[in-house]
Structure formats: C-alpha cells, structure tokens
Image 1 (spheres, one colour):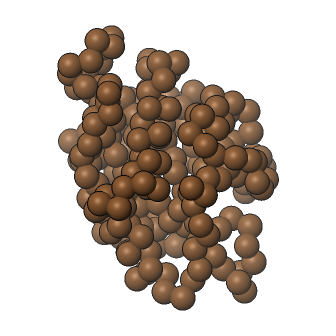
Image 2 (cartoon, rainbow, N blue to C red; image 1 turned 30 degrees about the vertical axis):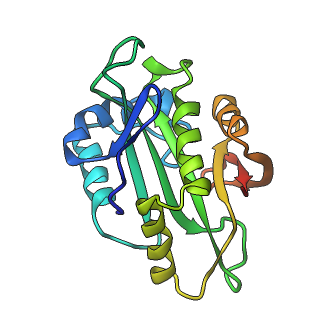
Amino acid sequence: MIHPTTFTTPRLTLSPLTPEDVHDLHDIRSRDEVMKWSLKGTPDPTPQTTQEWLTRFLSPEISPDLGPRICYAIRINPTTTSPPPQGKVIGTLGLHTEPHPTTPSNNPKDIFELGYMFHPSVWGRGYASEAVSAVVDRWFCDPGAEDIRQLKELREKEREGVEVEKGLFGIVNQGNEASVGVLRKVGFTGPVEEMVEGDGRRSFVYWREF
C-alpha cells in the first residue's frame, strides 16, 4: 500500500491507516448498518477478522483482488467544536485501482475508485462530504500530492500496457442514497453504468472527470 500524506480539513485530520487503528476500525467494520453497503456485504464477526483484513490491506501485496491503493484514517481535529469522539478513527477513505467492472476481458481497462465508510455515530454531520471533497481536490488540483503521484505510478508499473479511464469512479450499492448524495455534492455524475454483483446485489457507477 502507498503510504499516504497526512493533511487536514477544517474539522478533520486524514492520516495513514496503521495497525494500531485495528480496534477503532473493528468498531466500524463490525456493524451491519455500515458493512451492508460495502463490497464485502457482511460485518466482521471478530476483531481477528478485522486484524487479518488490515494486515493484508497494509501490506505491499498486489494481486487481482487487491490493486495499488491508498487509505486514510479519518479523525476529528482536537481543536474542533464538534462533539466527541476526538482522537478515535471515525472513518476511512481509500483510493485504489481495479479493472473496469464492465469492460470485456479482451480489451481491459482500469479505473481509480474512491471508497469510504464512517462510524454511524458521526453520520449526518457532513464529515463524509468534507473528507471526500478534500481528497478529490487533491486528486485533480494538487500536483504536489506525492501519495497520489505514487499511486498512479505504481498502477502504471503493475498494469503496464493496460489503459486507465480518466477521472475518479465511485460505486454505490442500490439504496445507499446518502453515499450518492456525497458523490453528487463533490461533482460526480451518474449513474453512468449499472452492475449486478455476484450475490445479486445491484450497484451503480458514478464518475467525475475534472
């Protein structure tokens, strides 16, 4: 995994996800109301499950189901007037590359996908929009964002010869209107495509070019 750069927004700090974050992360990933919207679809049953996922995710591994990636741990700034929990990880936000979900195997393309999840206790405060907006701005507008540059370069190295679609993509499960609202607020359009997951769940692809 690319080691991300720490930066702040008016209310949040986005920093590298670390092994020490496993307990806060399990408190998020063990909740059905969070994980039902994820690719996994089910909550982590034990802290060990979260630990195993985190260890693999933070490793240098590049494989068909784990492409080049960045993941930020999100915390509330200690100086903010927002309610607790300051200091705890309240969410994660990641950027990763993966094969375009609907292109044919004889003409593969990659996409850069943005994904995020937050603890239910902080839903409705605008933190998702604030964090996503900041990362999207760094992606499109900050040529000095070293972690994003490294992510793009690693994709080129690992997927040499495979074209990458322009812009950023977000894939949202059917019914997750809150997540759709976040993406639309920061300039994503769509849905540009519809997908059916292996378990029959429908999801929709949103996209932002600039």
